[in-house]
Length: 498
Picture 1 (tube, rainbow, N blue to C red):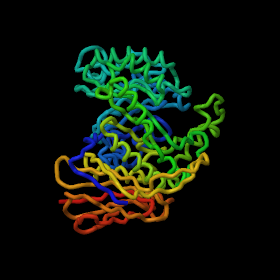
Picture 2: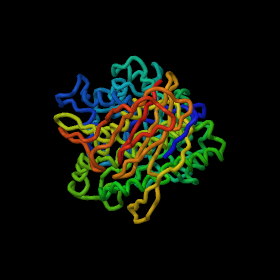
Picture 3: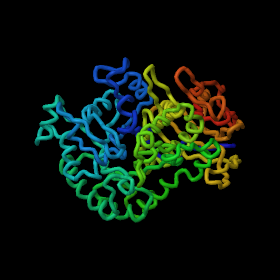
Picture 4: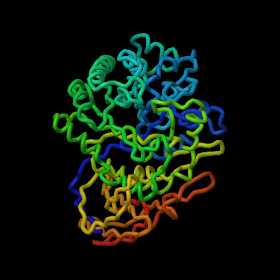
């Protein structure tokens, strides 16, 4: 394929928050994941130092917490201070010890250098409870909640800028689900109270690609909101754990950005596209496996609803399919960086996360290396590209449909603080290497190639076993029309350094 670009044709500056992460009180994401005081890897605050180091490596820019479905029956006041009692989490049907709360979360963010992003309880919670949380975090000393924070040992405000009103409150599975009209009213009152506490906060609210829901929300609350939140899991295997195979995953890359297109169109039609950006604040290829919980008929025994969650821990399932899909979606976010300002991979640790913990150490799954590649090797200015002779591939979707999808996915970038180009190039072909011809008139310098591929589409990483990593190679001096061979099922960044 021949790819062309003009370095002066910029789509926009990509926000670092496109590479954000998410963590929830589910299974072992918090307890036994990032927070494990009994682990030999734990620091003085109970955080696993190996996990912190891995988070810092991918420069995690923002971390959404505490949910997720968990938050819709979570009362933050029960998890600050010395007097804490365990509670029964009605979302996931387990006891939470409440030992990890707001202050511990802020410590985690400070240790990793990321922005905190708190999602509030809009299920069983109230607008006042949400604004009380902002008081606790952001006011210097006014009122009982700021004073309570000071009593708990935090003299300075936590300064949490980003807040979400609710999580998936449109869904029947969510505790405290709302109708569209109920939602618009609640969000408006919550936003008013939060902004009265701290006008510098940036607010988002749960939404989806549904016109009726979004119009109700934006007509009621558009003037208060800075963001609109959407979520997506393409391989929705919450009940079955029936993983799509590599070919089926490639079928998911067809119309990958449809949610962005639809929400962009609505924001534009309502003349809000210059005020409100999209926060794609929960996404992953595969839905988390939690059978018999988000269903009308609940599992009764733990064998039915709790123990099956351990199947999320099978590292052999996180293959190059996950890596290639993740790179394609990150490309889509970059191409839409003018309207998408934040995204949060769900989750960062355990379950379907890019980091996996076990007693003897951590595993960096295939998706981790994609974040490493994109965060540390791509530029922050996204450029317009065009191509000729784009190859396609035939795939069969999970539902049996036959589709034709582009075999190559390309995003070009440059840096705002230094010369050079960095091109993300994804080859979706399972067995065939493809050639990319670089037709950049103004480019010059040496060319390096950074590649994630593995030995097969089924390559994975586990403790003491690493098939997927970033490999570096030299391609020589840039010349007009030079060809770069891209391995099958690979994620690549091409550097042209002046």
